[in-house]
Image (cartoon, rainbow, N blue to C red; front, top):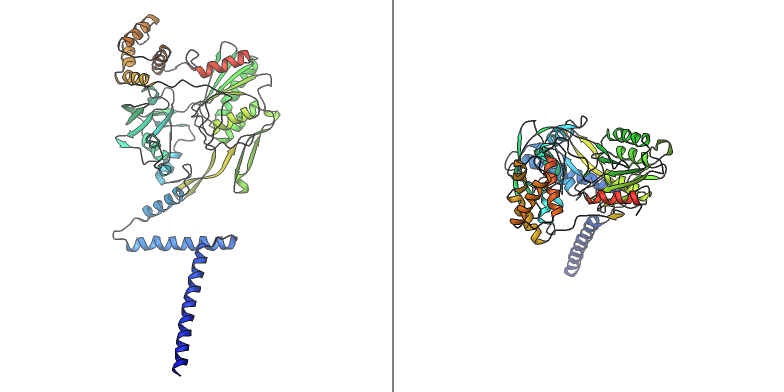
Length: 476
């Protein structure tokens, strides 16, 4: 009898152990199994949502201090988008929604007049450069406070009103720079390689231009596309009608420092130049994210016998890259400058109550099928300024620190050629070893910034423009 009891006890223990093992294996499998069916995926999502709701409510009821539900909500939503590791997919708070939408239909706002770019702080890691955390100025808008203060493309904003920009997003940066007309904002600038200075900018009403045009040498029509807005196609159409009326056979389209804009705007304008074929395609996971924009002969304005060159650089982004890629891949134009920025993704804006978000849903592809995102569009002919030596960098630092050019122009607002020659000689005596061409260019740039209507082009010092002109005039 005792042996039988021992047997039953041992058997029961073994069964309990086996049951525990089976339960453990089942639990492990359940948590590690890759869910493939739609039903399983929906069940998984339902479980996560229930867990999130329970956690949300538990924090509200049990955290040591009372918590504002709005703070928890915005924190949770921000975390959702940060987990995507996509700087272009972001949660937008109520204030950010208001800041982004105010005056967008009018194309004007109270600000400082700077096109800017910034890497998302959540994407930075140990391999990131120190400068990756700063705000990069793509270009100042002509005639605005930022332009008149002498800020340049590639200048970096390190602080706004003495607060570092390291941890803020591009949208938060825009919010800090914009504000009521007449108010001041201080920006701290880092100019490569290591030139630092502060500038106080008085916010003004900014009317964003879209297109500027001029004739070059009576033979070449130059078009500068500043932004791809809803008004840009109409401005370009007007410019191209002038080309047709004057029977001009050579066009330069400049999209350098153009950060992008509306997809509909760029496809319309590309269609003015192209009579057939793809302009751009988008590809994503859903049927709605897949599309192809094509050119049609009935909407073409520029005849085939008109030669076209496109100027671009590393700050030509988004819609500018679509245009450059379409013109290059179709063979309609030759491209000059440097490889574009590589922002080739599509975001859809969505409202959620008083907040919202932007979500990347697809990527852009050029007519040849090349992905634009993170790769950019390479020019047919690379043209760029030569890099400065360490000695030249030190001279440039000295030039800016001592404000030699600014001080010279304060005393000579419209200097003659002889005055400039004397000034250059003085700089040599102060051991400024920069090339004369660069010094003259810096002087001319500073003169232009003081003008309400500065020249649209700079044939003397713009080497990319000169290279494109050479191609159009000689075919070489």
